[in-house]
Every structure is written in C-alpha cells, then in structure tokens.
Image (cartoon, rainbow, N blue to C red; front, side):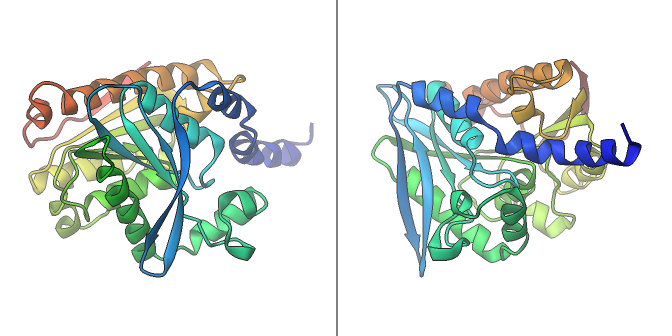
Length: 287
C-alpha cells in the first residue's frame, strides 16, 4: 500500500471506530434497566440528556458523564447503562444540543467532521452551564441521594477536570485521557479527589500528567493518575469494540474495575470518608 494512503487511513480509524458503534447500541437495546431521554432547561437553552437508572432499593449516587469529542454517541449512552448496572444514576447531556440545523444535537449534525467542528466552537461558559444544569437535574431526582461524581472521556476528560473547578458539590472526578487546567488558582478550587486514567501510547495527553501532578500537589489536592501501558487514546471505547487490540481491551477492563472500586469507596459505608486525604500519587500501570 502507498505509505501516504496508509497514514491517511490510520488517521481516519479513530473517527470511524467512534461512529460505528452497533455493538454498543445492541447492548443498550438488551438492557433491562429504565433508560430515558429528558429535556433539561436553563436560561434560554434546552439540553437533551440521557438518563440511566439502577435497579436498587436505596437512593443512589449520581454520575455526570461528559462525552468525547465525537458527541453523545451510543457508546457514551452504553457507559451510562453500565454505571446504572453497577448501582448509580447516570446522566449524559448532549452538549451539542441546539448546534444542528433545526435545533438538533449530535445525531442531527450528520457525521464526525460536523460534530468535531461544532464542539470546537462551544463557548466554555455554555459547557459549564449545560453540565451544571444536568448535574442539578440528576441530583434532585427522588431516586438520588444527593452525592455527585463527574467523569468524562477525551475532550470530555478535559471538560471533567475543568468542571471540577466549578462545582463544590463534587465528591470525585474521573478524568479519562483528558488534560487539566494549567493555573494554580483554577486547580485550587477543586473540592474533591481527581482520578486519572491515561494511555501509554498517547504522548500528547499523557505527557501533561507529571506537570498536573506537581501543580495539584502544590495546591494540596488529591490527584491519582494511572497510565495503562500499551493502550492508545480512547481505550475505554476502543477496548470494548469487537476488533479491539489486546492492550486496549485489557486497559479498558482494568480501568473499569478501578473506576467502580473508587465509586464504591466514595459511596460505601461512611461515604466520602473512604477517600484518601489530600496528596498526590503518580503511577504507571503495566496491563
């Protein structure tokens, strides 16, 4: 194959993988849990949100999910369902609500290129307001216990870190291969531990982790990043796909296990008392 053509095809692979998610959609269709779409309003905006409810008898902790640069896809909705399976109420707002002609969102934009272009033009203050509105909605549900965590992937990982600087209610933030704000005053506002999940083969993002760890330590905040060697950017999604490479599949499985353990520690007996006191751990995990 022509080397230039091979490089072009390789560049298109992540986007193609993100848009071809029949396996995620099929799992959603088999879910026994209550899944619904809701309209969340704030100011002059209306945000389309996907909510997944757990089958539990007690009130549950809520998790706000912030989607990838590919928008609110079937895979993100499937993550919400998996969190519900584990006992949490998950809400995933479509932060592209209203960005498509006619007021639609991710599904109506017509493809990956249009979605990425629309995300690049989102005002930061709108992202914060939309995320905050979704968080308000889910924490006020009768089935919710008032505790809130936030998690996001890729672009959403960076937005998760940024959202943590703007919401004092948070009990934990889970950043999947996203970068952090670079100023001490921003990081100093974070009210909760931040847990990072990074890929060994993702130099653009993972190279920022050490500086972030130093800054978080300087401002007295808990930051616990782990790097999964051999995995690539987007391994939580790519590792679940039928054609996943072994490193991505194992990183995804290990990452899920860690995420659920941390959530359980946050919400178990004693609630947030199970979370470590401020400090910093830096870990590269071979999986």
